[in-house]
Length: 70
Image: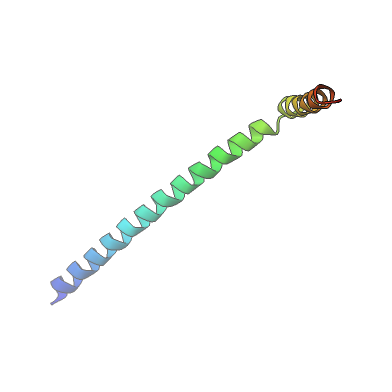
């Protein structure tokens, strides 16, 4: 009777351990995805990148303004 109870508790602990391991892996994957997003956002927010984007947009607007003007 005592051995059976111990075996059941061991099995329960193993099941909980496996469940926590899977949850930990899912959490780690989610954190990796967020890190990747933050890395891209940090690169986009660099001053030289923002300057290039704003200048390129300005050039396109001027090009269209003078090209299609009648």
